[in-house]
Image 1 (cartoon, rainbow, N blue to C red):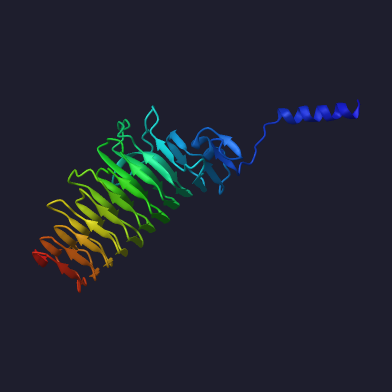
Image 2: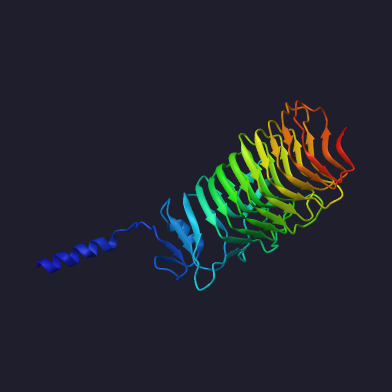
Length: 336
């Protein structure tokens, strides 16, 4: 057999063997050189762990699941950098649970991974709730970390509950400089995690359904930071903390325009630091130790224009609650 025949035979054998190619330059769309994919999920599935998936501007009707470490980055092309993730015609399936919120239908799910997402618009389109789901979620980070920044959230699906962003059992996660509007029930929810930061977000143009919370933290297992956020428009509680330790809440600007509500509401919180916030509403800060150890610090806040600047409920357990600055309050401090 000639040498050329051997070469042909070897190439034929290799062509019959399944190949696994490493993909480190996945591109969604065709606006940049790389390995091209027509959907974001296909690119995520093919990409190497730890690599970056680049997304061309456009509208993508998809439900995304991320279970590997990666970065999802939007490409600026032809004077546009808009990537909108909308609900596909098949809807958003029920794909998870949370101990507080029941069965979940997340439009974007990050699970058991470290993922960095930026410059996305998550549009729920006021779609119908998934069969069997209690709660719709725009983005769910679950037992995950990483970051999400410079993104927008709007019009969640119409489940019993709707949460813009749910950070569930997260560690070392940074949610910053995002815009959330038309939320229902809760805009940003932080449950069971530690070392999570929610910073510089704009939460506004809310649904005004009378039970809405801008940012809520429940049953954290370690420290977290909520700082420099703006919350306003139809909200009952700007920041609400339930049974969580060592939470730092600083530099937030909250406007509560309902007749009953609070800029910051602590229920069973311990060792919380509430400092340097500017709060407008019926109650500026409401502290309810609820039989817990307390030890919270509420100082150097500016409390404006309500019936009570600082409301203390139940037994006050060693909390430090002055000095604060009060403007146009009917009462500066009230207890019951």
